[in-house]
Length: 139
Image (cartoon, rainbow, N blue to C red; front, side):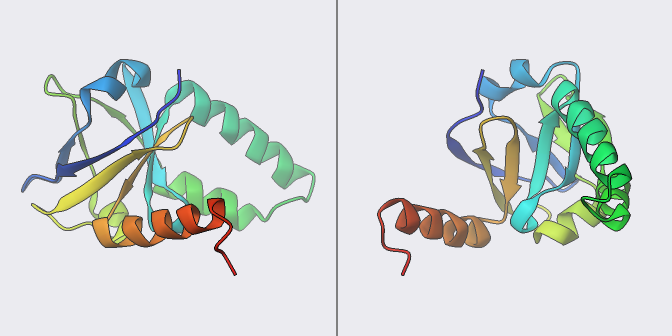
């Protein structure tokens, strides 16, 4: 099943985020939070993250990507379990990386095989650029 759609949510004062109900079952008992592309936070099902980690390690061994990229991703990642309200805690370093404010709004957007958590302003810019590109207006 794919993760699709975008939802505005609110971080609480303890840096917890209630994920949209439609996504919770697809994440399973635990998932990974890590630095995502374009300064988002990726929420990745455990199986997907672990498969990607194995591929990335092989690419490092083959000299295709820098070991520094592997280290940065591994250092940023954490295994989390959703609480009974479907919330995950986003640690300080990930919040700073993505520009997320405590007790502030965020956008939770599907990205097919994962979720992405965005600051609303950054998401609006990235989404507009993608929409323009789809429409052929990316000149």
